[in-house]
Length: 123
Image (cartoon, rainbow, N blue to C red):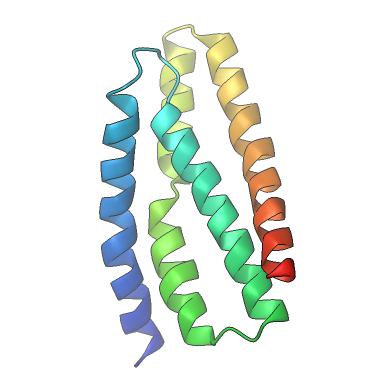
């Protein structure tokens, strides 16, 4: 199967999964913090770190990386929504929430990817 088709198939699952997870999480919180996007980006970073380690250390097929890594994780995680939500928080003068969201997303995403990668090595 071509790489293009694999990426498209993964994207067909990742994008709706992101939307549904975001709605489910945000509906449970009344705060201005974008918990849905933060949760999605941390989960996706962990998954991509895990997939990367599996690809590097356990010979996972490149097709799996295209489907799950590029297709699914690429559409599941969302930098553009993160940027928009931080901008919205800033415009509404929730500066502390905006700054904490940036730190949590960037540092948390890197940490989640590292934890995922480490788990992938030990598996």
